[in-house]
Image (cartoon, rainbow, N blue to C red):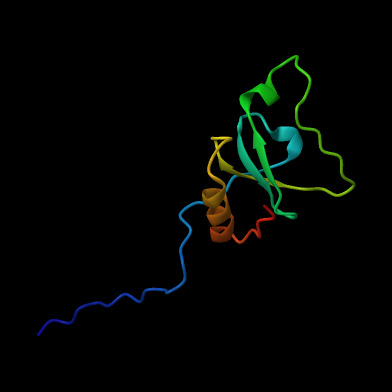
Length: 94
């Protein structure tokens, strides 16, 4: 009788990829973003990033904040955005 090697499996969820983390000044593509600290959701359409145009999103804060990109689609469903936040240990505030 041959012995078979048994592999232990974790019951904890595995994240195949983490959400990209960027600073406000580095936002260069449209999409749906969440502020990691506050849980606020930001939808940034391509028009907001047009060169030479007036910025559509202005944020002023004394504290540093990091954004996580949830999707390249600025109009992704809110429920899907909330689920992605939960899967990545971000408490949504929307």
